[in-house]
Length: 234
Image (cartoon, rainbow, N blue to C red; front, side):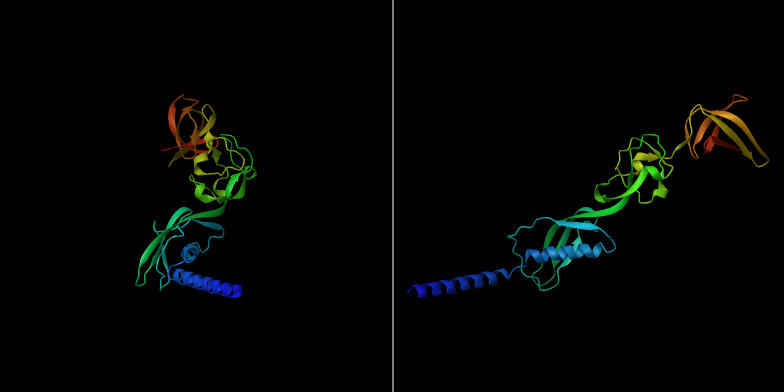
């Protein structure tokens, strides 16, 4: 008698399991939607060496009809970028549906950072810089990948070791400082002379500044060309 009851129970459980599997197969699986999202992101990031994808949680109670065609994916913002994105997954079969999947894409790139503390006004050299891999979506002020682009630039503020070098914390160096003795070179089609002068203001390359001629005491406008050198054009 006991054996018959056990057999009947087993048959009943098999029936319930089969019914459950049959019902589940009528709906699109969450895993397939997530796979379609990842495949789309991978296809858009071909050539990007290092990135990670983190998909947002989807409601496991979602009941969408099984799509008879391949799922289509597009970025709601038109293109995928590092950081937070929303991907639209669309079924274009007879029973159409659309679902949105959030995805955080973390892109890592080798950028230039400070190899040591850099003081405000300090000139950047190869010794003060090195390369490090950073997640770039958080670098809102930008970054540099080539040291040749920033060597001999000047720090606008103090920069801590490991901080990313960007356009906001560097500037063109001051080639002339206020009160400094400079050489004034006068250029004209028929004349070229040089006289001594005193800078009345700081100046960067190609910046026009006021200079006092030491001999005549006349104040003139001159263009900074190099360290301690300004040019007047006629």
